[in-house]
Length: 526
Image (cartoon, rainbow, N blue to C red; front, side, top):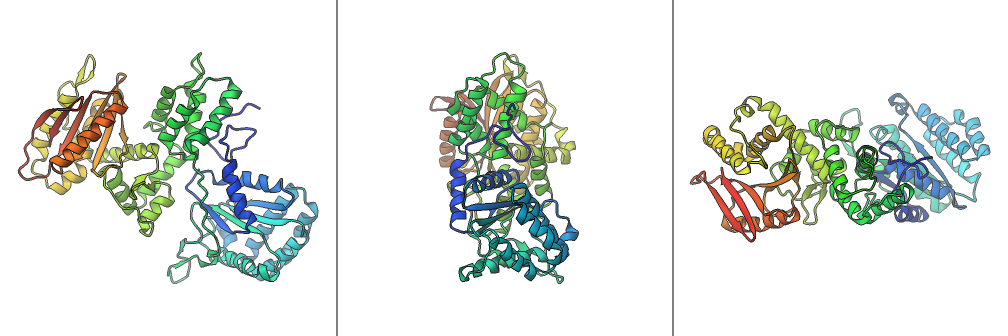
């Protein structure tokens, strides 16, 4: 069977090119060996189900364990409202799994008894009896897709059952060695609103669970293991370390995004070529494809939906992506917690909120810009202007000059708050009207102390770097020039551009050609 890069469902080693996650599995198995109960809570398509699949296989290869991996994905809402129906469905899932694993006697025992088990206390006693039928094994229960169940009182009562047996196991009560739940939410701290009076509470029945600290994202060296496997099987020449590093650069190791970039290269970028060897340029092309305005997937649809459905979440992400705000990462803040839960933000090395990866940031940037253009359609149509194109590419100084004139004419009387919030979007919309369909602009994340936005524009195989920033005085300006110079070095460029928003009452609309270090930087103030 020919392997492929997988971007749907569980990754299967014999069918898919996969990162070597042996060290991660060893860490999880250690938790099982210690008899811990825990939740694997990670964002969507972050490898939770694949981790359970591989862990289940690994444990069942060991003589000491009997691992039962089930999923609550197919259990409907009605079943969650009825004790008898829920218990019956849970036991059916266990019986099916035992039969699949080659334990027909245990499966038959469940089938013969399950209809007589109608209450949670009866289920507790039945679990003890079932476990005692195979005392040579340590039983492990894995439940995937628990999110659908977690907002039901019956599910909480079920967790309470497991918790009670966990607490009594040192007194000799037979139960599971380890219970592992998987979902987006951390069941241990999930806020509930399930009581008839609508009051909220916390999911205390799972406070026995330990924190799950295993990093499921892929590091660059781990990505190398997948590329090595691919290169060997396809006889392809790849600068593995460089390509892996660039894949990580764009994805920050988000498992789905890593696989999707590789899939684009293998199945879309390489086939038309006689040369099947990977290059850094192929990764760049894959990045352009995955953030392309015409491409979407369920992960990106979910990302947009989460932002659309929560105004506070949208505003938080807007401040980070568009306005470059430095917001302290505080997990106790409900909105920051939610953004982290959805995989949108992570803490930076300096303790501030940053978008998880460059792909997400570009998708969010394009989405918010599109909403702005749609909302401000009549204002965007004012842009117009002369021909900004030259035989060699774009006339960036003219673009900035005309935008400055546009702002002076149409927005000089607008309040600072409006310009601070929407001034950058006005320029982005203005720029998009010039390059749309011909060029490509993407936003580079930055973690500096300045409220900056770095844009990279590609047009006719040329690149232009434009930095948008707020004027905060000459000292910060000099520091910003140093940072822009370093950034230009990363693209081997000697020319850069600055668009500076000045909110001082005494400001002047001016321009300046700045020679800084070995760079020529054209700056305009608006």
